Length: 116
Image 1 (cartoon, rainbow, N blue to C red):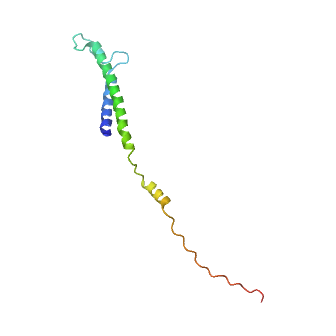
Image 2: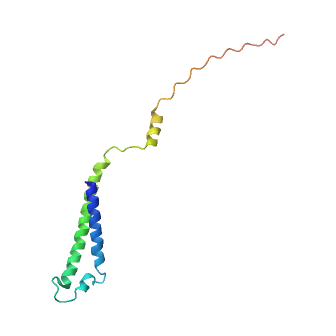
Image 3: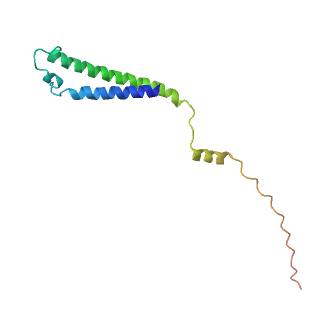
């Protein structure tokens, strides 16, 4: 589900970029290309459509991101696989130390008679 939402968010982002690039920051944009009076939508309707499309896509992106975050939190609760190095460190820390070798009996030193 998270993958689907991420792909959907990418599609919405691309559409949002295209709609914003079509607009002119000074109010011209796509509407300035439709200067003839026999257009179906007209100049004012085109800018209204682009503005509504921008707001709709921005809100859709916000909702998709929030939904993806909610579904992603379920995956965080799953157990995390540790790396092989971390497992070896954990195993070494919890492993019992090897049994200490029993001390070998050393022969007792014989006293040297120095009185002779």
